[in-house]
Every structure is written in C-alpha cells, then in structure tokens.
Amino acid sequence: MGLLRRCLHILLCTALFAGSTALSVLAVANLPGHEWLLRGALLWQDPAAAAAVTWPVPQQKPAPEATSAPEPVTATEEVSAAVQETQGTATPAPAATPEPAATPLPSAAPDIENPGSIRAEQFGQGSGDGYITLNAGSIRNYTSCSDADLRSAVSTPSLPFDVEVDSDEPQVLILHTHATETYQTWPDLIYDPDFTARTQNTALNMCAVGEKMTQVLNEAGINTLHDTTLHDSPSYTESYDRSYATTQAYLEKYPSIKVVLDVHRDAIEDSDGTRVKPLCTINGEDTAQVMIIAGCDNGSSIRLPNWRLNLRFAAAWEEAMESRTPGLTRPVMCAYRYYNQDLTTGSLLIEIGGHANTVTEAIRAGQYAAEALAVLLGGHLD
Image 1 (cartoon, rainbow, N blue to C red):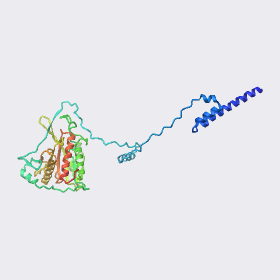
Image 2: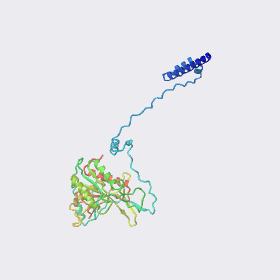
Image 3: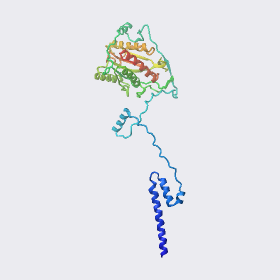
Image 4: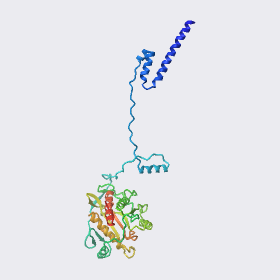
C-alpha cells in the first residue's frame, strides 16, 4: 500500500510539471520577443527538449502596398450614377473612359453579287446662256425667266434678313424632309444594287450631316437648332407636308429664326445604272460637292412670292462657299420647285453629295458649307 502511494505521488508530480511547462509555453508565445523567453523556460525545465526544438527565423511583416488616391468622379459619372439610382439599379457608374473615335468606314466593300459601278466626277461651274455667273460660283437657270431677271434678283449685295450673332434666341433651323437618305459606307467604287440608300440610323443618314453643320454654326456664334425628325419614315408620301408642319411649329415658338435649311443628298445615275458621286478635293481630302436649290414662283401651282429674296440668299451662300473652298459647289439650281420655301426669306434646300458618296465625304462637305455660311452671317470661326 505504501509503495502504491509513492507511485501515485510521482505520477502526480510529473503531470503537474508537464502542465506547468505547457502553460508557460502558451503564456509567453504571444509576447513580443517571445522566442528567448520560450527557449529559456524550456531550457530551465527540460534542457533536452530545448535543444531539440527547431526555432523559426523571425520574419518581418511586409509593409502595406502604397495605394493611390481614388480617381476623381466626373460629372458624367455622377449623372450616370444618379440616373441608375432613379431607375432603381444599384450598379455603380462605370469608370471614365476616353471618348470613342469616329467609327472608320470599312476599308473594302463586302462580297456583293453583281455589284453596280460608281463613277466619281467633279462638276464644274457654268457660263453663257442659262447661267448667271457670280463672283465665285454660278446659278443655273431652269425657269422661263430671263437670265437678266435672275441676275437682277441677286445683284443686291445685302441679305434679305438680319442675323444676330451670339444671340440667346435661335437664328437658324436645320431639318430634313428626307432624313433617311444615306450614303455609301465604304470607299470602293461599287455599290450594292439591293441597298435602297436609306436608313433610320441617324449616324449614317442626313441627320449626321445636319448635326455637323449645326455644330459648326453654333460654335461660330450662330444660334442654330437641329430637328432630327424622320419626316419620310415610315411613309415617304407627304413627307414635305410633315416637314412644313414641323417648320411652322418652330417658327411659331421661335420667331427669331431667319434661316431654314432643308438638308438632303442627291441621287445621280448614268443611263447604264452607274452611280455618280459628285466629288472634289479640299485640303487633300475627298469631299462631296454640294448644290443649293432655290425655288421659283410659276404663277399658278407654285406660290413663292418672295422667291427672288431666297435666290439672293442662295447666290450669297454660293459665293461664300466657292470663294473659301473652290470646287466645293455645283451651280445653284433655280427651278420651279416649291420645297416649303415660302416660310421665310432664308429658306433653301441644299444637296450634300449623292447616294454614291461616302458618309465621311458628305459630313466633310457639310462642315465646309456651314463654315462658309457662318462667315456670311457674320459669325466668328477659330
């Protein structure tokens, strides 16, 4: 019995000793510089165990990576975020990205079965009978009026209206009776006979040209409105009636408007189906030619009592374009055409290129035409 008690006493002491060792290790393991304390405790209680332990090499905590300041939020992003909140979405606004460049035209036409041909031609100015020669450019007389009659109509140098530069009130309205008219989308001299040369895509139809013209005029201090209504869609019939109503509504709301420009494109074809692109070169770049159409009163079906005033405006714009950018214009067409030109004394139709020109050539022509108009109206160009 005594022997048993001594054995139990030894076992109890051993357990207490082992437990104190473990507690010592746990106590010092979380202290700074704990390695030497831990080593010392083990060495004091069990030299053999201390010698057997492999001690890790102290590691430095890596410094936190430098973080840059957050990118500033642009006004566009704030607006985008606000719109998303209004619409009940929780997605954050996208990060600011560079403005996309203009989409380039395809470098080559696609494979087309039985493609049609395109012929480029620069139309020159006219002279002699049937033409009124201007200081720059000319007018083609398609009426029964004498050339002398037309010449006297445009001999007055001043415009038949006054435009206020840098005005808060609109001075010019640009719209499109045939807004869906469009152009080629590749520079190759072939076209797809199945393509009607019409589209509702405002980046490719007449609205794209009108937008460039509007931009130029506004930047020059000529307050200009651009209406992008597709008056010929879905129905081509009565499109002029619809554009007339649109123009009237603008004139009632903004009586300050003096000039109304109906911007179209032409469609020229040879008898064999070859499409003709009126083309010139300005500053080394292919540019569509433009043609102004000024209507004439025929005394019966076409009532344009102020047609001579519109023609005076047409002649002045023709001279401004042709003097600034020689070759840009075809002769002004003065013919028995109505085209809603009774609404103001500054109402004209202008053809920017034709259906065989490319969109790029047409937009470039619209820019030059608008720059000349801005100068004519007293605007300021950079």
